[in-house]
Image (cartoon, rainbow, N blue to C red; front, side, top):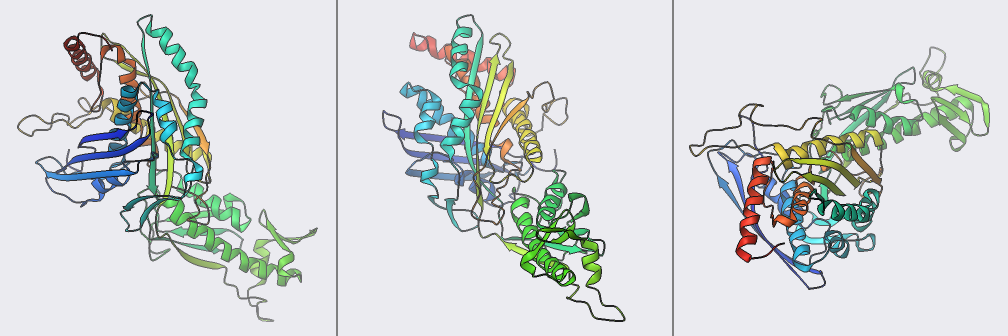
Length: 498
């Protein structure tokens, strides 16, 4: 009620294509409701413009955007931050094009999605960080094929036709996006070993509950050669690291993770030098694994890292063999974003009598570069999809004609529960980014970007016999019934059927 709203955009969008489905041009006129004051400048509408074309090859683009000040609560970033709006507009117009051409929506996308051979691919726009908008890596067509294969798209289409003949209205909706993630320019990390061989990792990126401590500990433990349980992660504490930016914009794994990776490598080099002195071996012959240092090929020489560190400390009898400085601080520079992508498939059943929409299946085939922790990645995707389902079916800030908020409680503003969210199927694709040493891409917002578009496409597909045309979300029962009535009137006016 009093913090921020989001998603309030109106698009007047057109697409031009050849009869064979080759896309030629997109033109979009966007109105953004900024609310009573504009606290975020053009970041949100610029995100919308920059992400409009997504995975499609479209050689010509014209966009005009108007920010409108109203008496509503101000507009601010909400998971996806301008991208779900762009994807909704684009995927809706693509499905309408498919219907106009008599093409299957999947085939139209297959024809126009960029493939691995097309990347890196530049869209002639600057990104919001001022750098050229160049997709760095991926294979969007392969993502589409992976999604279609995982849901057995052809079987779903056959089943849909059989059920439609029996009066059961099922629909299949597709949506794809390409997302700029991990905006820089930096995030810092300090990695420090103590006398027992344990590590403390400090970074400016503070966890919001998405498992950063685990992912960051994995990165450090992997490089340092110690068990993950030996790593303690501190986030957002200026007493531990002086400079940092924070956790937002799907940026922490790339920015902070890269700093942790590089800093851990520098500390490992110091451990190797200290172990070489203790073991009287060449540094190139030293191995570190499971918290032990040894001479390659002689496992009996293994000593705990704690002993290596302690042996480097000066005593009354002698100086340390090496400088006992087992610490490194790195501020990884991320000049521009990495581009993650995904294809979402929604399967719905619509009750034409009540307007109720039931999600039967939901699948995501995604690429976020090299996976650090697949379980955490799936958790991010599933949480985002649940949020996106809310935007597609339930969540809406509604006002009356006097500007009074009508949805001010959770009795009026509905959020998705386990009843509305099906099991979410996930397909992992890995196309490492060349823009950071880990090859990772952001994943925090992606799950929320495509659900409104995929659900809208699925509902329209289910209700095709009624001449329904979906132009907005959310799609609650009353709205679906309105669409059915509007479609029936449109068909009656044409004197035919869909």
